[in-house]
Image (cartoon, rainbow, N blue to C red; front, side, top):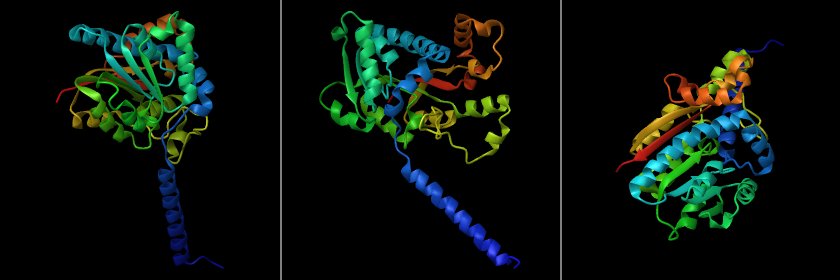
Length: 295
């Protein structure tokens, strides 16, 4: 029996309704991501090789230099909060430098690893001024109430792309940061996903608007926040960008390793060189923005 036009329309309408329902369910089901179940995989994948070394090298340069300047200006160690700290390498190194740290993550397993690294890497870990909080960042306000002054620096690295409502974290920053404090915001760059797949010839993936990474193990976020949106948030909340860097501006785009690519120290040196240069920095797999707030 031939299909009637109205049957086609009804079928299309049903498919459309089903798609909308599926999308609505997905949006309702979104929650803040925890890496508790894959902490070992996270540690190996993110920091087990050159990619992690590049990431830390850029962040160390950007943050340590600024902290030294701010601490000198204030004449005291800084009060620093690391939100969604994961393995907390940068935060721990800042504590070793003498600053006071509050380190937070939603994952107990991740912070267990961070605490173990403190014990293994320091003769007197108990002398470091570190407070640990295992909880969603939304519970930090209550835990911090009456226990500490506001923070001179808040670090939030690779967190916003894993939040169900990322924009809401800006209100939390406003509550916890001193009037002239600084925000270190590092986040996945969605433009890098497109660019890398263009280079690799993965056109089918780019044409698939319904593509989702398997986030049971994948560390590619399905809901990244574009640079322009982050910049808009910062403007609305009265932040002034001090510096912007790209993390891994070329390393991940080089499937054929030759010449200097075979020398890890040379790769890091060149990544550092181009990480703050236009237009290369905007190609970074991650972007780091250091911004100060002036009321």
